[in-house]
Image: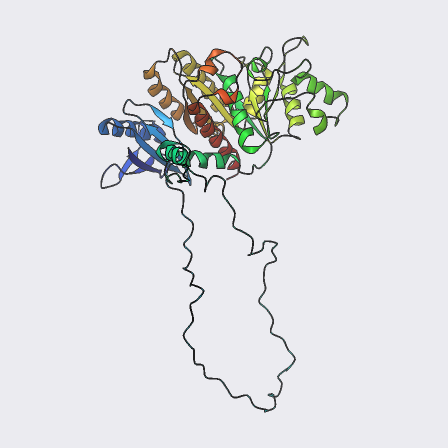
Length: 444
């Protein structure tokens, strides 16, 4: 598989390495964005080569990896490239090594009196040091997964059959997967909101929300993330999770309890309104209409205010009504916006119109933290992908990722993360890694 390294040097130009002996300069003209020009060049290069091409795009000190197939399909891939090797340390000498004798000229010691004006009791002043509580004798940090044997591929099979401990190759997909997992665990600047939105129904918003919530909780730990159904009425989150919520475990009950007695929702009492899933992730069911009112803007804001005291990340599963106050709150306060898009013209068009409207109301900053997730499924039209990806990049989105077809998502049954296909879990890990990276570097 050939590779291309593309560095965006300005809003209209980019420099390509790997397409030949010399670097190629790309320029955007006639109103095109530089991202669209890069996508077009990569597709042409892949078609000419007759094989997939891994493309690394560098922009403002950050990079993203794409895989471009000869048929024009573009997918977000795991971070590529070898993991940096540890700094070289000078070779240590064996214990039995003996230095050569050293001859030094010494001034004879005598009983001559000290020089006039010299303080014979003065002690040398040590150089100033910065106080630190870290001992130089502490054992070096062990990076999770860095010394574990390979579990997949040929090396993984050899380890299983022969009981070996062969490490995976630094540039292998397994090491890139481990790097993605490691990036999910980085510290966050504060409480963050991840919104899943597409006004077209049946595009997979709720399955994506459930899967993303489970992956983040798996790698960041239990009680770090919560998925909330913020549909105005009739959301399906409670019908898709492994453990359904009991009566009264919903968002309106949570808000009512805090309103009746402010400050009463302590960690020990929070479980009365949350439903813990087998993987340690929590969910809050939405409004089923029994209260006779819809979930509004202030309701969604109040729920987030309560949960921000106890969780790091809130995954907002939105409904289909763009006029609902809760939908407006979730999209306008999103630190990261995820847009699932099946390869159908109706779903792609609805998502594109939504992004254009959000770009108008919230500005390009919203698009810079938006990830479009192309989802495979029955009834897909492959030719839609080329036009859709171009349109989304022209709108200014941060990246376009790909989610393989998952029968459990499409079945309408309850979703158990342990029953998902490995390809689905790996894709969700890439999406979660990108989400956390956007949140962690929001202030950069």
